[in-house]
Amino acid sequence: MASYQSCRQLLQEKSPPNALPSYCTRTNKYLAILAHGSPALCKFVLALKFYSFLYYTRFMKISIIIPCKNEAGVVECLLEALVRQSRVADEIIVVDSHSTDTTVESSQQYANKLPLTIIKAGKPGAAHARNAGAAVATGDMLIFMDADLIPDAEFLADFEVQVAKHLFAAGSFTQQMKSKKMTIRLGASFMVGYMRLMAHTPWPIGFSCLYATRQAFQTINGFDPELFIMEDYDFVLKAKRAGYKIGIIKTNCQSSDRRYREQDFKQGLRGIYGELYRYTHGLRITKPIYRYDMGGTTTSTEKDSTS
Image (cartoon, rainbow, N blue to C red):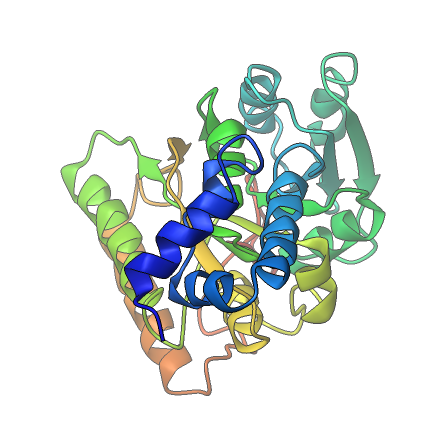
């Protein structure tokens, strides 16, 4: 059997750069050995990888789904950021989850600037809203963004490059949280580190901003509306268990500190309690273990949850 290096060299000779992009010639040990034993079959495999690369770049249609409840004055910042993307989304779906303010009217102001669709969720809750958006989406790749996120202009371009490079099927994004309080900034950095750590375990997590191919979303039946909180964690975990490649996309995306400004310590304790409860109850939180309301303005009787 020829050595790996000699096989790799043979592969590169049989697949010059003008035949296939360098992406396809940077292959692994098995393809290199395949090139030595069966050049024709190796060419076929490389062609499949090349077309897969094209699917994740030139042919990929991206749909962004934004669940909203009482987000007037907030969702406009996200929509404005999406207007300024260097790689414009192919479809943006705002899903109103029983808002009592002017969320819908505020979103409609961007109908002439974005490929925007506004729908109403049949049932309350973030999971229902995300699933409703996915049901009408036409994209190959679905991105679920909380209304209080502000991505930079290269957000979608960076996403497309990284997904194409690694062929991820589902996962989450890195985020930054600007706040006047150092404790909040440190807490946000800790959560991103925690998410990165869990990506190397059988129990990956994600929050606030998630993505999945349409196929992966349909295979795992989307978000579980039976969960009170951490349905975003569950979403990534289900994709992992279904055999899909999970990845964290490194981007510049600002998240809001609005839940922590007044009671950062109390909210931090709630988060820790939620994590511990989840790990001791089969990774599922199906009952209200504390108050957690969806979106912006809320009332004391509302029980909707979101990431």
